[in-house]
Length: 301
Ligand SMILES: Cc1cc2nc3c(=O)[nH]c(=O)nc-3n(C[C@H](O)[C@H](O)[C@H](O)COP(=O)(O)O)c2cc1C
Image (tube, rainbow, N blue to C red; front, side, top):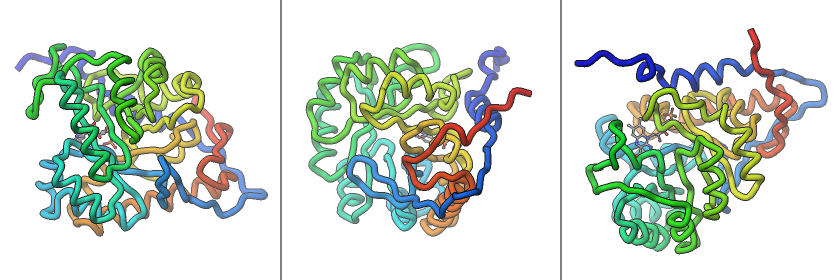
C-alpha cells in the first residue's frame, strides 16, 4: 500500500478536537440561575439541543438488533430526534408513525428528479425536515461519487433553490464549511445548514467550530446553523452553542452507547444534556438561545 502523504495524514477529526480543546470556559456564578434546556427547531420542541446525526443503518444493525428503530426509541426517550442517513419510505413511515422525530437524508443524486421524489415522499410520510450532504458529491479521487444506491452529481445553488421551493419542509444542507457555500445557501433559500467534516471524509478540513463565526455572519439569522463533529459530551455541545451554533448533532458517540441498546443511547444522551446544563448553570447561561461568546476564551499558549 502506498504511504500516505502528510496532507492525507492530517486527520480532520483531530483538528476539530484540538479546536474544541483550545476553548476554555470562563465560569461565573454570581446571579446565575438553574437553566432551562428546552429547545425548538422547525416547530419541534426537544428536551435537549443535542440531536443525532446521520448514521448508516448497516452500522446500526451490526451494533444492536433493534437497528435504526431502537436508536430512534433511545433518542426519543431522552427527548431528542435524529437526522437519519439513507432511509427507504417504509422505514421512514414506521419511524414517523411511532412518533419519532426524524429528518430524512437524501444523497445529491445526479438524477435530480429522484431527489424531488424523495423530498416529496419525506413530506408525505411525516419527516420534519430533509437533509442533503453536499460533501458526498465527489469521491476520494475527485470523481463524481458512484454511491451504492445511485450515481451522485453536480449541484448548483439554483438546484438547491428548486428543491427548497418544492417542499414545505425545511431543506438542510450538510457539509458546509466555506463562506462561498454559506452564501450559496442564502441564495438558495435553504432552511438550515450543518457545519461538518463528515467524519474526516477529506483531510485537513477546517474545524466546523473555526468556520462558524464567519458563516454565522453571512447567514445573519436567516436559518439555523447547526454544527457536528467530535461532540462527545455536553462540554463540546456547550462550546459550539456558545460560539453561536443554533443546535448540535452527535453521531459516533451514540454508536458506542447503542451496544447497550436503546436504553444505552438514552443514558448517554441524558448524561450529555446534564453536562451541558452544568456548564450553562456555571456560566450564567439561563437558556438555549441565551448564550454569550464571553463565556469562552481561546488558549493562546
Ligand atoms: C458509520 C457512519 C455512517 C455515516 N453515514 C452518514 C450518512 O449516510 N450521511 C451523512 O451525511 N453523514 C454520515 N456520517 C457522518 C456523521 O453524520 C457525522 O457527520 C460525523 O460522524 C461527525 O460527527 P461525530 O463526530 O459526532 O460522529 C456517518 C458517520 C458514521 C461514523
